Length: 196
Length: 196
Image 1: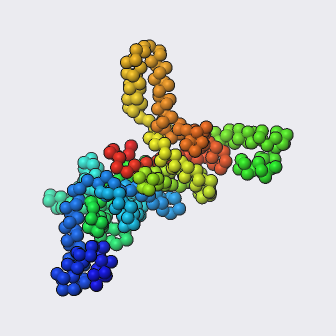
Image 2: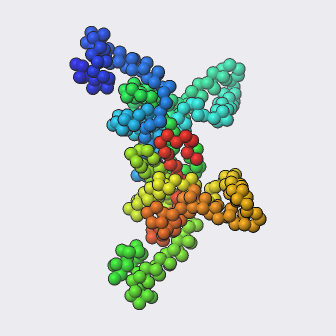
Image 3: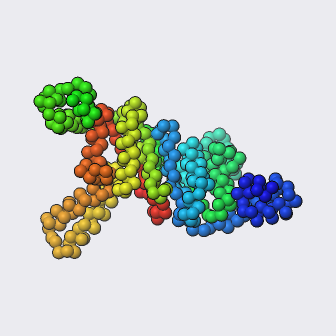
């Protein structure tokens, strides 16, 4: 049973043993228990410095789309694990498929943000809305904009229940190191504008 | 003999036949003849529109360096040839190894150019040079800067006799289509600044 739990969660032997004890050998509960503990630890780890990692690429549709992404972690040891490599690969595929323009909300420039807001404001006002309703609409549309444009706010294409931000936290919990998606580019063949 | 010439130059049957006739079956001379003809044709082709091609990536040193490059040509047919793919690969490797910052001289901004010039001017003046000699020194150093920073002016790492610009012209002559290196990025793990 401990073995099964380890396979399902990637947690250590002692953690799995304890999780089963605390949850009276209920496997499902033990998984939830480990996830919550792991995610809490992940939150703490997200402050740590990350200088290792890897640059990963993904070429899609016979060379029509290409992605380059840098994913960082704390040690070269973790950078070389299959899990980390797979994570970098999944992130690169996500970028190819879902076309984010930023990694995080914080990267959206004040200027771009203002432009988006103005568009939403005009749309709302043209449809006859006034006052606080307009602000509510802007807020809703802005959240949608973040979900489209910011990688960490996007739904994971392989599992839309998860955001990329949650997927990242799971990886931090699983690998026990802070991990960060540092930067990416996405080239699409024949795009008119230069990428970013 | 025509077969050998075709293999060596990639030129068509009739061109090879003519090249051998015009050069009295001297294989070496026929190769030079075809190259010159091809390169002259290449010059003409460099005006044509390129919307096809491929996005190619190259990951170096176990994920420590990554390159993404877009190389364009005129037709999807050429984009799918092994020669074109190999060319894109060699360019990506060049970028990984030689770290260019621009594709062409023209991409160097007026601001960056002015900064470079000022550094060279100060260096020359500090070493006691004055007047037209200073301008000569600046010109020389600027050419060196272009050879380091601009992909098309760089020496080809696999064959330092060639510049990347000449390699490009050879590919245009060989594949019979205009080809252009449109853009690239190079990520190095843990670089302090964002690329470009």
